[in-house]
Amino acid sequence: RDYAARLAAKYPGEYNLKQMSSIYDDVYQKWKYVNDPKGEYISPASRSIQNGLIGDCDDYAVLMCSLIEAVGGDCRVVLAFGKEVTK
Image 1 (cartoon, one colour):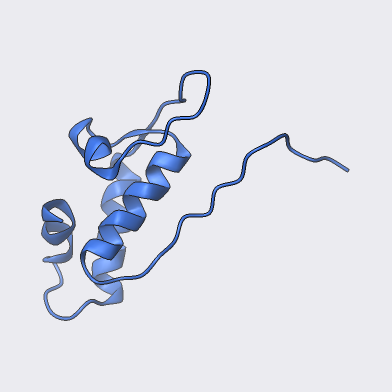
Image 2: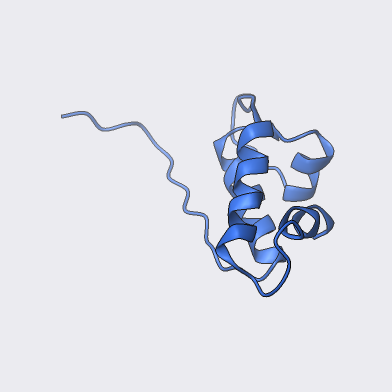
């Protein structure tokens, strides 16, 4: 909540698109992609923040969704597993 509030506070007031954009821009610019070890691990948002915004795509999605919800937005994370299907 604290991290999300600091980012959203750049555009005070009721939840708005500028707040969401501030959150997105900050996380997108600072995110460092690192693969999970064998198997799947989904990091809690707080751990991704503590680790300096490091993780894979599902960690990124969980963090973004958590930050947006922390300032009043709604979101959901959809995960897909399995082999890629080619035609």
